[in-house]
Image (cartoon, one colour):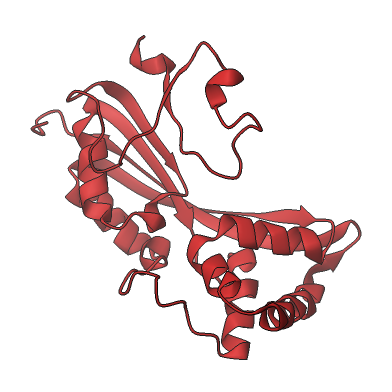
Length: 215
């Protein structure tokens, strides 16, 4: 199958109910792989995309180098990642509630990993250039995520934010209820006609692989 017909799939809560995306899109070759050891030859793809995965990589430099390895000379790469919580308010509401209650992260979470490292556009751009990309650009984007109620906000945060959600899930039921109440109270600042109008913001970093870069 040509590279344009290949997609990488990461199993998560957004997957089809069947648990296998191939059950819905049988004509596409889906594979699961480690981002630092992708099972593809050098220069196999004309484009590599990653949507909101960057901040979760334990070794982002190694991950970017591997993505650039499988990118053809002159090929394009595009990664997205969240802005700071002051502007990415789904994350911000949860983090502020955790801080308000003084909750500590569970001990099993990795130490020293900063999910906000690439919420700095300069750090984001430096990462892309260091991986061997030219014409690097990091563009800021913002929009509004309309959620019908606090329950929808709670489910989105608990199901979509690995580190933050784990810090809350590790608490007892009474503490989790207090966190939810604090989030709901803060979210009322965004009450709109159709529910909660939560501002979100993110960056999209792009670059082109140098033709002289060794694969």
